[in-house]
Length: 144
Image (cartoon, rainbow, N blue to C red; front, side, top):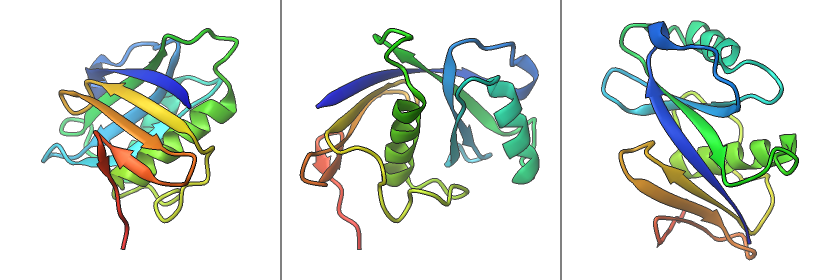
C-alpha cells in the first residue's frame, strides 16, 4: 500500500504568505464545516485559494483556510498523479459541499493511504484498499 503523510497548517486569508512546497488546501465555512478541498502542482497555492474563494463567493474574513504539505517523501517521488490521487481520495471520503469531482466515485489508484495530521485537530487515516473498499480512521465507509 502506498502511503503519504500530509501535515496541515491553519492560516487565514490576510496572513497567507508565499507557501513553498504546499500541495493541498482546505476551505471551511463560518461554522467550521469543510466546504472545499483543492490542490496545486507547480503553481502557487495562493492562486488556487483566491480563485476558489472568488468562485464560491466565500468571505475572506470568515473562511477557515488550511494548507497541506506532503511529509516524509522526497520531491522526486511527489508527482502530479500522487497529488491528484490524494485529493480525490480526500474528496471521496469527506464529501465537501463545493467539490464536484470524485464525490460519487474514486478515480485514483487502489491501495492508497493518507495520514492526515491536524486538519480536524487530530490525526486521521483515510484509505482505499486494493479491493476498492474505503475507510477513514479504521471505520469502513459505505455509500448509499
